[in-house]
Length: 395
Image 1 (cartoon, rainbow, N blue to C red):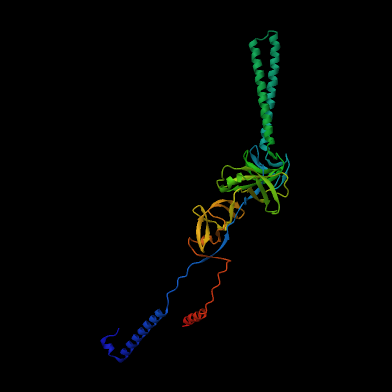
Image 2: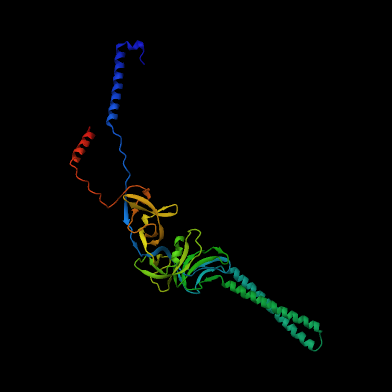
């Protein structure tokens, strides 16, 4: 800071003069820049889009859904008695015949129980034979009036009781013999092993599924149908199946079963489409595509799926009118491949945006891709104006 004492010094006066000159030069430069600069022109946001012109026609309604080839009947087999698995005779994919052994349990405990039942049957048989013999002797004595009638009645009751005990022991022995036979799990139909749910050494309870066997015969394709297509698919009788492994092969099929309840996980309705028993080159677990087709009696408008704009559960499209877009709600009648069928909201001849629908807003100007802009008129003064503009930019 300059004080009155320092301002009288020659060097101080020289330094103050330099500072003033510097400030004056900075202010002059700023004023010159402000005078030369021009306000930035606002550019209008014109977005490029792709469009199509709508055409009305009677198109086929079809829906194609992915699915999986599964057996019509698949049994989950289990032992009828509890025990420890000691042998497994099959693997996944093994072709089995009716009566073939699949797994075996340890038979030792059941064999001992069968021996016990056999001993009980022998004892009951001996008691029955003794009671019958005594009854015959007392009948002879009664005929000679050597014993009272009440004594003979007691022997008859004892003989009947012994006979009942014998029958009870016989039934127990037969039941235990059946239990011993249940230690071997056998296939009840011809089929293919599709899964194993238990292994050797595992202790299982009675009825626990241990082997899955798919019965040889008719095959189904299981698909999940979205809830918005349930009503339309119920009325479609033309059903075809196309395998992912054989895209050129089309197999006629039939909708055999449609679940009335949605799956709690996928929220789709399970449908089973029957392929019949004479199909070839179709294996379990293959990926298939099921198409449901129907003729549309009314005229509809077909637009690409990319033209649909979804907002608040409402379907709309962007119409292009005089270079400006407008959002219009529409009524969807169905789908055809990757296209959507519209039943109302638009008319043939209107132009609809098919790409960039999520970047637009009502009243926005657009330019259509693929359409050339009109050529500018030749103006003799244009070159001079361009040269002047370039010279101004150079300055």
